[in-house]
Image (cartoon, rainbow, N blue to C red; front, top):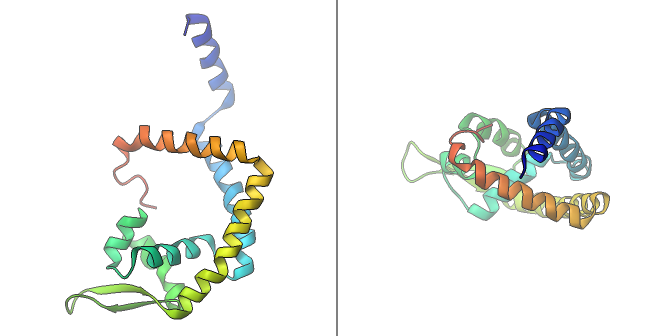
Amino acid sequence: MNEKTRLSTQAELKVQGCTNLKLRQLMRRVAHHYDLEMAKSGLKTTQYSLLTYVLKLGPMRPGELARGMKVSASTLTRNLKPLIDAGWIELGAGSDARSRTVLLTAAGRAKREEARSRWRAAQEQLNALLGEGRVLALHNLINESLELLSPIESGADNE
Protein backbone atom coordinates (compact mmCIF):
# COMPACT_ATOMS: atom_id res chain seq x y z
CA MET A 1 0.00 0.00 0.00
CA ASN A 2 1.50 3.33 -1.00
CA GLU A 3 1.52 6.39 1.29
CA LYS A 4 -1.36 8.12 -0.54
CA THR A 5 -3.60 5.03 -0.24
CA ARG A 6 -2.68 4.60 3.44
CA LEU A 7 -3.53 8.24 4.24
CA SER A 8 -6.79 7.96 2.32
CA THR A 9 -7.70 4.82 4.29
CA GLN A 10 -6.88 6.51 7.60
CA ALA A 11 -9.01 9.52 6.68
CA GLU A 12 -11.93 7.27 5.74
CA LEU A 13 -11.62 5.37 9.03
CA LYS A 14 -11.83 8.65 10.94
CA VAL A 15 -14.99 9.61 9.03
CA GLN A 16 -16.55 6.19 9.68
CA GLY A 17 -16.25 6.63 13.43
CA CYS A 18 -15.84 4.25 16.31
CA THR A 19 -15.78 0.52 15.52
CA ASN A 20 -17.27 -0.28 18.92
CA LEU A 21 -20.23 2.02 18.25
CA LYS A 22 -20.80 0.55 14.79
CA LEU A 23 -20.71 -3.02 16.12
CA ARG A 24 -23.09 -2.15 18.97
CA GLN A 25 -25.52 -0.52 16.52
CA LEU A 26 -25.45 -3.62 14.31
CA MET A 27 -25.79 -5.96 17.28
CA ARG A 28 -28.82 -4.07 18.63
CA ARG A 29 -30.58 -4.27 15.26
CA VAL A 30 -29.78 -7.94 14.76
CA ALA A 31 -30.78 -8.77 18.35
CA HIS A 32 -34.06 -6.87 17.95
CA HIS A 33 -34.78 -8.83 14.78
CA TYR A 34 -34.26 -12.15 16.58
CA ASP A 35 -36.09 -10.96 19.72
CA LEU A 36 -39.24 -10.14 17.74
CA GLU A 37 -39.35 -13.60 16.22
CA MET A 38 -38.37 -15.45 19.42
CA ALA A 39 -41.08 -13.63 21.41
CA LYS A 40 -43.61 -15.69 19.43
CA SER A 41 -42.32 -18.74 21.31
CA GLY A 42 -42.36 -16.97 24.67
CA LEU A 43 -38.56 -16.97 24.98
CA LYS A 44 -35.86 -14.35 24.85
CA THR A 45 -32.90 -15.10 22.58
CA THR A 46 -30.65 -15.52 25.62
CA GLN A 47 -33.05 -18.10 27.04
CA TYR A 48 -33.16 -20.03 23.78
CA SER A 49 -29.36 -20.03 23.63
CA LEU A 50 -29.14 -21.27 27.21
CA LEU A 51 -31.61 -24.11 26.54
CA THR A 52 -29.59 -25.02 23.43
CA TYR A 53 -26.27 -25.04 25.31
CA VAL A 54 -27.65 -27.27 28.06
CA LEU A 55 -29.14 -29.61 25.44
CA LYS A 56 -25.91 -29.85 23.45
CA LEU A 57 -23.42 -29.89 26.31
CA GLY A 58 -25.49 -32.15 28.51
CA PRO A 59 -25.84 -32.01 32.27
CA MET A 60 -22.94 -30.11 33.80
CA ARG A 61 -21.96 -27.96 36.72
CA PRO A 62 -22.95 -24.29 36.49
CA GLY A 63 -19.30 -23.14 36.42
CA GLU A 64 -18.52 -25.40 33.46
CA LEU A 65 -21.62 -24.17 31.65
CA ALA A 66 -20.67 -20.52 32.25
CA ARG A 67 -17.18 -21.17 30.84
CA GLY A 68 -18.63 -23.03 27.84
CA MET A 69 -20.97 -20.14 27.12
CA LYS A 70 -18.26 -17.54 27.85
CA VAL A 71 -20.38 -15.71 30.43
CA SER A 72 -19.77 -14.90 34.08
CA ALA A 73 -21.19 -17.10 36.81
CA SER A 74 -23.47 -14.26 37.95
CA THR A 75 -24.81 -13.76 34.41
CA LEU A 76 -25.50 -17.48 34.13
CA THR A 77 -27.27 -17.56 37.50
CA ARG A 78 -29.44 -14.56 36.51
CA ASN A 79 -30.32 -16.19 33.17
CA LEU A 80 -31.04 -19.61 34.69
CA LYS A 81 -33.57 -18.34 37.24
CA PRO A 82 -36.56 -17.74 34.90
CA LEU A 83 -35.89 -21.05 33.12
CA ILE A 84 -35.83 -22.90 36.43
CA ASP A 85 -39.01 -21.08 37.53
CA ALA A 86 -40.71 -22.13 34.27
CA GLY A 87 -39.68 -25.77 34.81
CA TRP A 88 -37.51 -25.93 31.69
CA ILE A 89 -34.23 -26.36 33.57
CA GLU A 90 -33.53 -27.81 36.96
CA LEU A 91 -30.55 -27.91 39.25
CA GLY A 92 -29.90 -31.51 40.18
CA ALA A 93 -27.49 -33.07 42.60
CA GLY A 94 -23.85 -32.99 41.59
CA SER A 95 -21.01 -35.39 42.19
CA ASP A 96 -20.85 -34.42 45.87
CA ALA A 97 -23.08 -32.78 48.46
CA ARG A 98 -21.82 -29.27 47.65
CA SER A 99 -22.11 -29.35 43.85
CA ARG A 100 -25.09 -28.96 41.53
CA THR A 101 -25.76 -29.99 37.95
CA VAL A 102 -27.75 -28.01 35.36
CA LEU A 103 -30.26 -30.30 33.65
CA LEU A 104 -32.74 -29.77 30.82
CA THR A 105 -36.21 -31.07 31.71
CA ALA A 106 -38.62 -32.74 29.28
CA ALA A 107 -40.62 -29.49 29.24
CA GLY A 108 -37.38 -27.62 28.48
CA ARG A 109 -36.65 -29.91 25.53
CA ALA A 110 -40.16 -29.32 24.20
CA LYS A 111 -39.88 -25.53 24.64
CA ARG A 112 -36.49 -25.47 22.93
CA GLU A 113 -37.86 -27.51 20.01
CA GLU A 114 -40.85 -25.18 19.70
CA ALA A 115 -38.55 -22.15 19.68
CA ARG A 116 -36.12 -23.67 17.18
CA SER A 117 -38.49 -22.99 14.27
CA ARG A 118 -38.73 -19.33 15.37
CA TRP A 119 -34.93 -19.11 15.50
CA ARG A 120 -34.68 -20.59 12.03
CA ALA A 121 -37.33 -18.16 10.74
CA ALA A 122 -35.39 -15.21 12.18
CA GLN A 123 -32.20 -16.39 10.49
CA GLU A 124 -33.93 -16.93 7.15
CA GLN A 125 -35.51 -13.47 7.35
CA LEU A 126 -32.13 -11.92 8.13
CA ASN A 127 -30.57 -13.81 5.20
CA ALA A 128 -33.29 -12.42 2.92
CA LEU A 129 -32.94 -8.85 4.24
CA LEU A 130 -29.15 -8.74 3.99
CA GLY A 131 -28.66 -11.21 1.16
CA GLU A 132 -27.00 -14.59 1.66
CA GLY A 133 -23.69 -13.44 0.18
CA ARG A 134 -23.50 -10.53 2.61
CA VAL A 135 -24.37 -12.83 5.56
CA LEU A 136 -21.60 -15.25 4.56
CA ALA A 137 -19.14 -12.38 4.14
CA LEU A 138 -20.16 -11.00 7.53
CA HIS A 139 -19.69 -14.39 9.20
CA ASN A 140 -16.25 -14.76 7.59
CA LEU A 141 -15.22 -11.26 8.68
CA ILE A 142 -16.45 -11.91 12.22
CA ASN A 143 -14.61 -15.25 12.40
CA GLU A 144 -11.38 -13.71 11.09
CA SER A 145 -11.70 -10.80 13.53
CA LEU A 146 -12.34 -13.12 16.47
CA GLU A 147 -9.27 -15.14 15.57
CA LEU A 148 -7.12 -12.02 15.31
CA LEU A 149 -8.42 -10.71 18.64
CA SER A 150 -8.29 -14.05 20.49
CA PRO A 151 -4.92 -13.46 22.23
CA ILE A 152 -6.48 -10.63 24.27
CA GLU A 153 -9.77 -12.41 24.84
CA SER A 154 -9.23 -13.56 28.44
CA GLY A 155 -12.37 -12.50 30.26
CA ALA A 156 -13.55 -10.21 27.46
CA ASP A 157 -16.72 -12.21 26.75
CA ASN A 158 -17.78 -12.57 30.34
CA GLU A 159 -20.94 -10.51 30.12
